[in-house]
Image 1 (cartoon, one colour):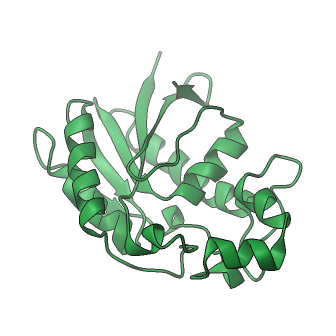
Image 2 (cartoon, rainbow, N blue to C red):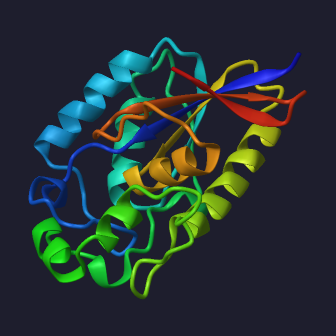
Length: 199
C-alpha cells in the first residue's frame, strides 16, 4: 500500500496578523520578530518528520517561513514555489480590520470565514470563494503527491489560514488548528486516491 505524509504548515505571524487585519493574496508582507521565532520553533518541531521537499505559496510570509523551517531539518530541503498555494483573494476585505468588516458586512463574514459545503461557493466581495481556493489548492496537492510518490519521505506545504480552511471545508475535517505555524497532517493513500486526516 503506497502512502505519503503531507504536512501543511501555516506561515508565522506578521504585523497585519497582529493588527487583526484581513491578509489575503493582495498583502505581501514579511514575518515580524514573533513570526520568525514561531517559524524557528516549527522547524524544530517537525525536523524529524522525514520531510525531503517543501512546496510553498509565492507570498513572502510563506516563503520566509519555508526557508526557516527547511533549514532546521537534517539537511536543507529544497523549496518549490507554487502560485496555486497562495492565500485566498479577499477582494474588498483586503487590508481592512476585522472589526470594520464585521460592522460593514455583518453575519456574512462568518459564512466566509467558516464555510460549510452549503455556502462555500459564496465569494468575498470582488474576490474568491473558499470553493475556488479548494479547487486550485487540491489540484496543486494532487500534483505534489503524484510527483513525490516514490520520494521515500514526506513533503511539507507552507501556505495560509484561508487555504487550510478551504482544505478543511472541502475534506470535511474537524479539529483543525489555524494558528500561525500550526500543522495539518494529511496522508495521501494512492490506493484509495484520497487524503486522510491524521489527528
